[in-house]
Length: 157
Image (tube, rainbow, N blue to C red; front, side, top):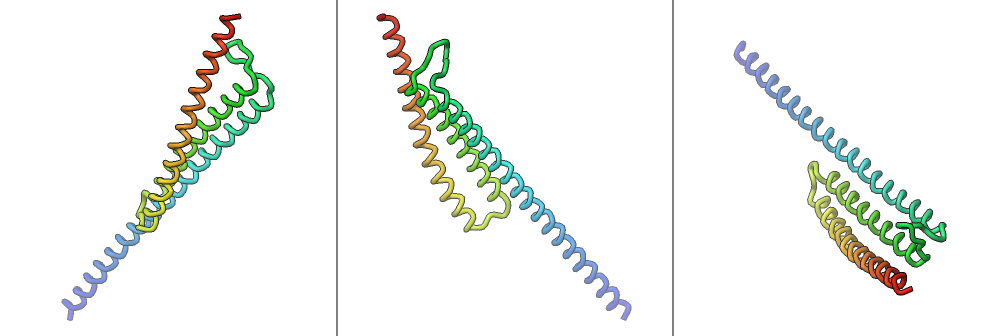
């Protein structure tokens, strides 16, 4: 009888130890999930701030009829070109931050559904970023050719 009682107590202790280990594991997993969600929100906030500051800068540049760069006045077309380059660069950076936020959210205990969503979102954002970078490169090439044309015109005058 004493052995049965001891056996019962040892089984209860093992079960409670396993249960407390499970609870501790569950607690830390939830803590990681909450931390990943918090990090995701912070990174998304940074991405939104990047876009907000870029838009404010673009509006400021657009409202001024002329900008001074290197002591030269620029016409509105060149100003628009610079605004598009700056805004495109900021949007590209923002897309990178949003992709990082999605990866952070999926890092802890991902499901196949979440991984599929991450793959789709990553593909779309990478696709957008690729074409945005290509357009920025073309705009910078146009800007450089405009600067060379202006320099040539100034030299011939």
